[in-house]
Image (cartoon, rainbow, N blue to C red; front, side, top):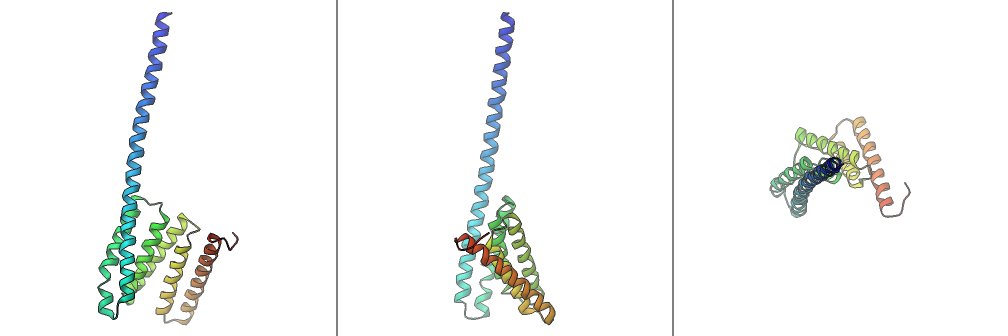
Length: 186
């Protein structure tokens, strides 16, 4: 009988040790995940700061030379947004922000470079919407990309298609914004 009690106590203690060790391991993983998320947030916030600085400089730019000086800020904002996404690929806002930065960078380019940046910006907005279907900012940015593409399109039929798509994205963004502000219905 004594041996049974000792064995039961031993196994109970062993079970407690296993649970305790598992809890410690879980805590380590949780801390690692939290640090990972904090790092992603830092890159995202740095990207936003650089974007805002670039946007204010764009507003003040008087000529093409002034505007080209802004390009390094946008490129750095893009790198930081990409790093934030690398660390947290579920962040809809980071994808939207990357799309917005690519859109702004496209405004400094011409021809095929401009188109490629606009297509890439659209992809990032689409990814943001896949992660959060209520991301009105991503819909607005996607609409802006389509408007920029339409502006450079020579084929009238393709231009019309792009403008119709832009209108649809803009309407969805407006609908989502109205809902967020309490003026619309789902």
